[in-house]
Length: 179
Image (tube, rainbow, N blue to C red; front, side):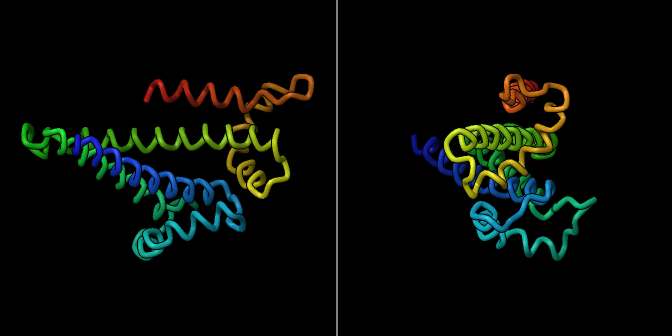
């Protein structure tokens, strides 16, 4: 029981931090403005980890690796903790575990990225109904635009209703099935 509670807390903390780092990564990759409440929160929450890494880890093709690498490493730590607390470390040597552990961490990071996209799409849909001029509407629209624009070119609005968020969520869930 205590192990489960510890794993729950560890998963919640590391998952939250991973989501924040991934959000920072995607906001920079998609050129979303950080001059809003979400951007300021994400920067203040992750600066302690990202800024020192930027000194030793440069960006690559405009991608902020100093935000992506810690998100991945947090997933490595989480999976290692889950595996060790469930008693799996003693049974196999570390060399045998390292490959699958690193691969599972890549998959976990991709899954969290897709969950982040689905959450942003839901939030964008809700804000468009409830408060379309909310200060959060613009950054979320900028974040989801690269995913919605290709779908909008194929599926135009039907009776002024945009179905692209629904299609994007269905496609994201389909990708999750394979991960």
